[in-house]
Amino acid sequence: MTPDYLHYPREQLAQSVLHMLTAGLSSALTLFAPRRMGKTEFLVKDLLPLAESNGWRVFYFSFMEDDAGEIAKAFPAALADFAQSGRWIAKTVSKIAGRVKIKGTFGPASVEAMQGPAAATATPTVSGTIATLAQQKRPVLLLLDEIQELARKPGTAGLVASLRTGLDLHKDQVKVIFTGSSQAGLRAMFGDAKAPFFHFATMIDFPPLDEGFTRHLADVFKQITRHELSEAELWEAFQQLGRVPLHIRAMVEELVLNPGRTLAEALPGRLAMLADTSGYERQWQELTALDRLLLHAIASGESRPYGQECRARLAEALGVETLSTSNMQAVLRKLERRDVATKDASGWRFSDPNFAEWLKTQE
Ligand SMILES: Nc1ncnc2c1ncn2[C@@H]1O[C@H](COP(=O)(O)OP(=O)(O)OP(=O)(O)O)[C@@H](O)[C@H]1O
Ligand SMILES: [Mg+2]
Image: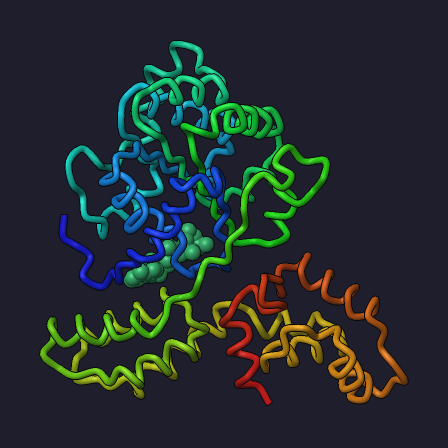
């Protein structure tokens, strides 16, 4: 398998996440970031190898890939298989494994392969399997990717409760890291007082990639093509692409194939492609005047749009006397339900950073 040269290692982040677990600060963490910001890549390529080299047994599972609607069976079976066998990696990883550096016995197994023997004997419950894992010598780390999907799927209530019970009883030996890309979905899982996972995990905002990432891409580009790529221009382009690593990476790959082409030539095409494949125009048409004003404010960096000053400005633009905090909150809640806007520790922003960038280009 070829190594992934473009992968920018995030070792420091992996170290601090792992440290939170080993120092006993927390036994369950949730990393939140919008789609395509590099959560899965971080779990699989940074955290997993680091944890393994520190003596953990690590299990990865993505709840996003549920072709057959069989999560309620597939997850307990995958976990039981992991408890039996040592190392297990769910089928999602096999899709990106082309770029993952495979070492030792770490490698893709297919769900089909595992369903044979597992189907013959009854699969133990998730809490039962966690109890088994807790008795084994090495500490165990479960990486559960896109966990909010579990709350959205029908027929998973028993599974969710069992997972919660198992993790609660064995938190000293079995740690868990969840990731999520929808605030509304995560709230259904962790923020609802009636839900079993209410306040169970410490929520951390997954930081976006920094200038080190674009510097790394420029270095690798130079090594491969012997052409220069300006670090400053690449960082600027990354920001215009909403700091979504997927897009800048695709652009660098495009330039590797055509090293004669410049960044300035490639960028407009990439921005245009994003805009019309994502249906921003259509989404925009469905919004009210106040929704739009509010989104303009957020796109231009306003993270607390319900503040006095911002409300007065929007009221004036809208031609009304005043806008109350509750007016604003109702709109924000609606935008959140539709997954247009989302809130984190630093305030409100777009769920899809490219939507914000698109908006800035519309005048
Ligand atoms: N550290 C990194 N170095 C290089 N490329 C990266 C890095 N992190 C992410 N990428 C690129 O961004 C793409 C998207 O990352 P990833 O799939 O991990 O995002 P995600 O947050 O898990 O998204 P989703 O919510 O869609 O699952 C990757 O396929 C890869 O091309
Ligand atoms: Mg992912």
